[in-house]
Image (cartoon, rainbow, N blue to C red):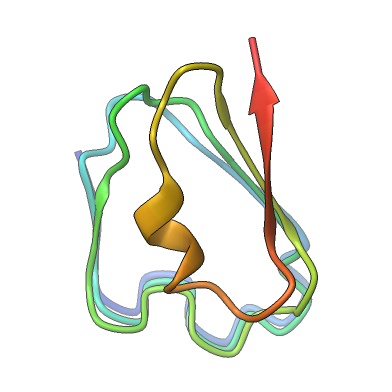
Length: 89
């Protein structure tokens, strides 16, 4: 249910991830410095809680894909500039 602190930090070849609906929290710097990460698909209707800088130093202008009707607006303030939200079924 948790992606732990620094789990994927510095994975420079990571370009996209899919977070299953069973994840309820993402730890500090879990994806920190994954500089090519530009697509995040999160399958949970309720946005997992984020730790400090869970997505620090990832690509700018990425896409956060989330279920239609979910609320991930708080994530946008924790993602780099230019990220947008796209709804999925």
